[in-house]
Length: 345
Ligand code: GDP
Image 1 (tube, rainbow, N blue to C red):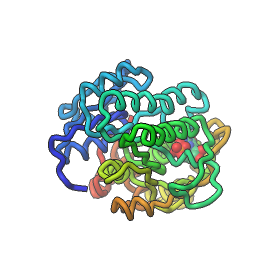
Image 2: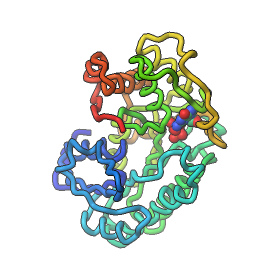
Image 3: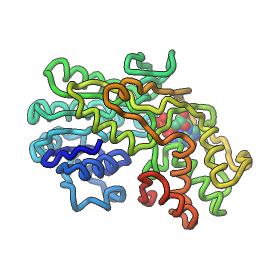
Image 4: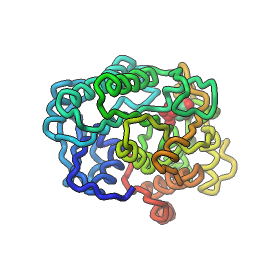
């Protein structure tokens, strides 16, 4: 959406992450005053926001700390709150289930309380997740599909989802869930499988590595392009009534298909010599297959994701080739639609 919203104020948690940084860029371009909650770390992780850090107001805070959230809402006086902060890596949620529940689940309740008591006219976006669907019984999944989470992360997201619905129904607050399927970009963390593959393929192509080690090749995901999903978040908060929306491409592909497409992109047809299965990266329980139905978002919000699977793979691989020093990678990345140029971790 291109409408200008000069004078409006947005508070983003998770500003330094993939989604937070893309969303902030979009909101700044639309004239918003942007405030970002920043968690204090001994090693700063601000590389994604370096291009616009001087145009946003950073507020120290943490989803574990109610007082800091209250203060952040008081200081920013937001028209819109986007809760994108979380312990967002499914794999880590098995080794740190309690922290995941505290941050990804209860943290949302804390932020809702801060809004209820200090900014009850604001609009609240919750980053819900397709991981809530988990062991799916029907495909594709839409807003009415039942949840069966398969990880502590998924369980925490289900808690947060219902907390949001409950605050909407109990207090009449404008609280909306975006049930977004996997969305990737060159800003995706290296622990996620798409970035691990794009980085690994670029290294192998340039002779910097010999193999990629993965937990499984068979699981399937509905992978979209992150900047388009951040636009959906914005649209969800401009809707006339608070509601929940699925964001997805409607296509599902296996990890193996991602691997094959990434190698093909650099001219390697037989990827098998370069990929090893390693049980260290497998999960105690996994989500076998996800495929979203974005009909409601298209019909009610006019949202249509344009970047399809092969293009997404190409954007990510080209970016990583560029970062690692291949001139062709830079060129191709510059051609990609709104391809970000942020260096990896
Ligand atoms: P998720 O859908 O939020 O869990 O996103 P991920 O990118 O972390 O994982 C997507 C799928 O890839 C899951 O089914 C993982 O089990 C699978 N996968 C296979 N090998 C790996 C790996 O080495 N790392 C990660 N992160 N996922 C892997």
